[in-house]
Image (tube, rainbow, N blue to C red; front, side):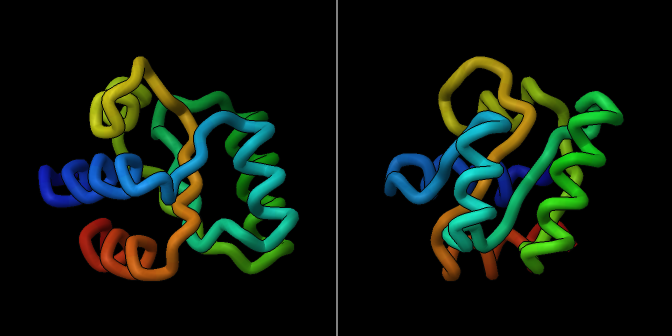
Length: 99
């Protein structure tokens, strides 16, 4: 995961435009508040499938990048496996940076 994307995740977190954790992310997806979901590459297959299926059903973009520690470090917390971006502007720029 590149440094610009990590820095942008940190900025989005400080702006209160992120939510983390499986249940909170799934709730944001179901309520159509999530614009982008980012999951770590070292997440369990079962959880990855669950998140992937939910995002596909609700037509939410999904990216699988980085490790739990990278994602957590980017937002100033301990390891995080799942992050939902709640702002369209941040989501658009992160999609560009993540490819």
